[in-house]
Image 1 (cartoon, rainbow, N blue to C red):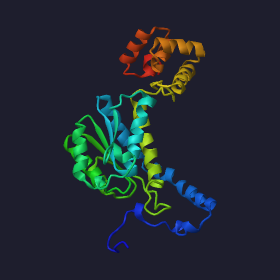
Image 2 (tube, one colour):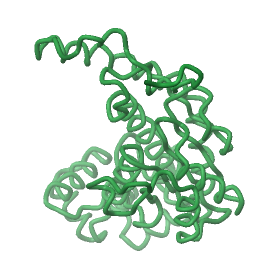
Image 3 (tube, rainbow, N blue to C red):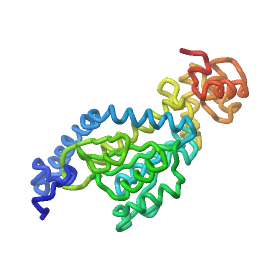
Image 4 (cartoon, rainbow, N blue to C red):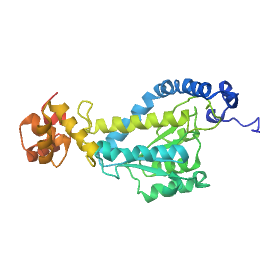
Length: 301
């Protein structure tokens, strides 16, 4: 039993609506979970101003050659690793530009590493190993908002001049005091008490989606709503690259295929080639002159 004198975070509180979870039919249980999940987007909406601050910081720092670094433990850390891993194929980012750091290392992605999240020094050590510096942004992720590993990572990042943000699922979270920007998403108690892979995990995934996607838009990796820096590393993505070029230029598949071949399969370059009637070298130069923004390279407002 929890001591009455200790205030538990919301993520550890019991949800009165699910007090008889073990007595419900599968459909009733799933309906309850679905109803609880409906509030997650609203909780994230309340945090949008803080999320926007983080996007602004990340866009500024990455445009100067910095990195977006997620640091967390357990489910929170795994979600950071997942978001980072999706950036190279989606946005054509170098593998080291968006980084997910998990307490306990790669092994912890698949099984618990006991005690790793309880070490603030380990969090600081992992940041030192990455040579975190003034051009970087470190986002510490902890559903509880009090994980020592995350606190150590954030404190080290601040000490070397990196921009810092804290993402938690409790109001007045401890990690909020260790970062420039605090994102606090209060989803209320979980259906399964303390299981933060549920609503907390869902909300963290939504926030990380927002941070990475909006940052990449700010770096010119999107034209309209098309992922024009997609890395076509397999047949599905090669087909997608062709469809992206077709959608952006209203050209035929054959024209898109030929332009992509000439552009070393880079959709962004192929789009500029077609819209401006120029070759790949000229298109590349235009993109360089306009910091990678297709809209600027093709002369559109």
